[in-house]
Amino acid sequence: MAVIFYLVNIFVPPLMGDITLPGINLNAGTLVGTIALIFTAIFLIRALADGLVLSDILTDIFVKRLGIKEERSPRRAARDAIYIIVIILVTTALYPLINTLEQNIREPLSTATTYVALGMILVLIYDIGRILYRIVERKAESVADSLAKMADRRKNRE
Image (tube, one colour):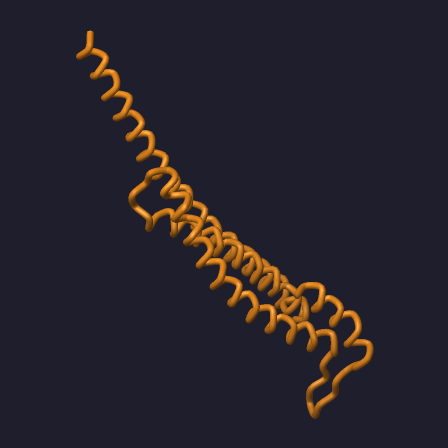
């Protein structure tokens, strides 16, 4: 998809030139880029749905191998990771549109977009860390319990 959109952005704007409608003067590159961005968003939404299904399956396999009974938290961590990728992609896709604005609007909007995306990513990373900490803590407790039972059995044998 990326190669196709790259080729479209290279070949179509020189062929079209500028588009002039009554009261509107559009650069063909901006128009083609915006249309490509819309198609990319549609593709991303479909890929995200498939990614969530795959992450659920992989998380189930991973959770079963670790011996963890609760499945909601690891699934949420996997979804948080996918949301981080989506936030990065959406933020990156917004920059060409923001760069078409005037200078006095472009810089504050660009900065605000960066900080909002960074804030959302930090919250999701914190949530992933908290979930992983709980998983490791439960696994460590079960290992400690099994080691304590083994020590008790050895004491009883002696």
